[in-house]
Length: 383
Image (cartoon, rainbow, N blue to C red; front, side):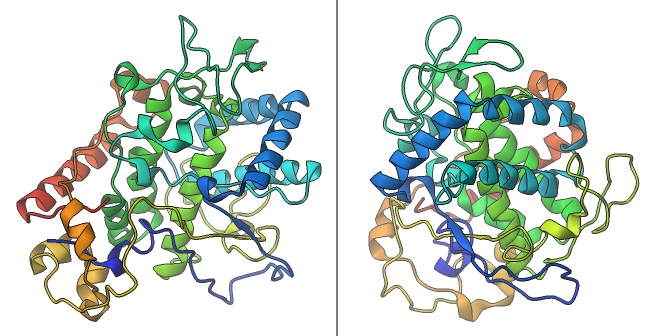
């Protein structure tokens, strides 16, 4: 059995969300909206420009500054509802600095779900792009855009990565599971841990080195990763009628609201809620370089992609709209494989990040239950 094209369109293919105008918006519409692209869709000239900008930002101390900010405010921006708005504003601030070097700069994203089965083999981690695992006792990275760099925060050290599992990280989270989290999350209280403790955490942990520290913005993967996390939040906001949903605990334990200030930036959360307004003058582009794509002719309606009970439990939105289901290209049928169990966060990492261990384990158990349900339904993923 295969999931529909419509089901995976938001996450697996990366279609940009539709902007929604809402009366709660207090920011003016942007006169010019630029696009954040998937990293590997950059042209060679764009990538050459971006590499020169990143080198200049390192020379001028911006990597150290953003690593310092993230470390300083770490406890206030994880494990509660500041997580999404803070990181949206944080990545935008980084992007704004990049634009000071060249206005054409727009922070790309890495659709890690494309590479979830074998992360270490991702083209993103090749020498032509971000470079791979670190080497030697200090796990120094020698290739890629940051190869051979010396980072200056919190002290002088070689730029490092230390991939988990002896350099071959276990599988990350599938596009199907992340789509399921998005469909099943009725509020931020559900969405935030569902994303933060799954895809967000495992990428930080498995890349290791600088990326696994509180000063993780030392690794540009941080910005690519959080742009992708932001893209998923935006899809939930715009496609699930949650444009103005903000709930859960704030830094002091009180209830967060749209009028709560974003940590460090001292401006209300409502200012960053809607892309295309105020300072948030960007959108997310589609991902045109997936290893497998849906056939243009794959539009035949089918009525039972998964048993109704499984569909209703894990993909409630899709279950409510059976007419939206489309068939999968036969070529993809042949290449499908069962979804593997994702890797888990270590107790040591959970402790160092000061996360709620019980909450993390609930998310991991949910992900394993999802994989079991897909296996029992004989579902094979084309991704």
